[in-house]
Length: 266
Image (cartoon, rainbow, N blue to C red; front, side, top):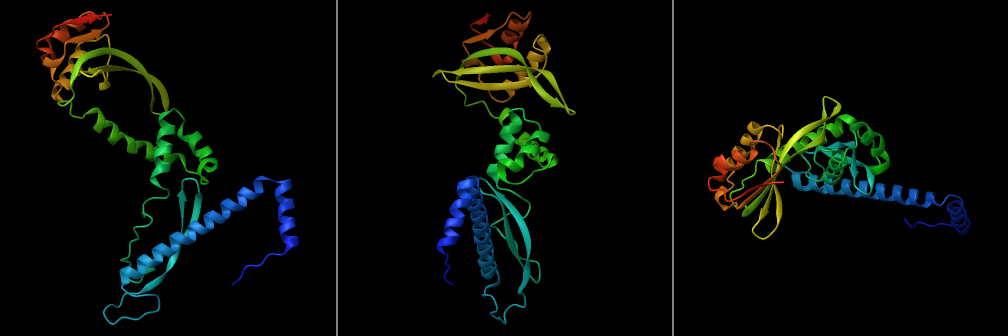
């Protein structure tokens, strides 16, 4: 079918765009969303054809399974927004598309962006309010909380990583306070921090652990954790720390640093 448009229609469209410039981009965005939705639908329909081993309306004596319509679904894409798609179904319910994961409502890059914004301090409620403006779909605060919880495993994996191959020569040892969300409220939590400097001058965070920086016992547990993760204490030539009473002796006496050459208080 040939699409035709008259000159008056074009002029009316230009006039509308002149009066409301943003309307052009709204039309473009709507057309892109519709086209992408149709494209994804065609991909899944082709996927169903491969799954059944025959095209639509083609009969087969080898299998009694066949198409059984489709169901509507929305999926959100970064930079495009929410698109409408039709997911094909088979009679036996055995077909599972790999184009759009069944358990996901938006692509991973959006999840990553939400996680970064959450880590920057934006609350789940605020993210929920602005999500429709950002990605074209409102995401509930519960969904955002679920996304943020998925970060926990990655953070713990990094925090507990193996240190045996870290060529660390110097340690900077200190404590700080981080604002953390606990039971819905923001609280200041004391955290012990150990930074390492490699033999080539690169800095790396070796350890983060909650604890009172004025407590020698807390630091002893921190050093024990570093040693357990493989940090070579004999390669360390300098430890820089504050003047906490007992910290220097804990640093030198701990098995992490059996041959301490220098511990400097600042």
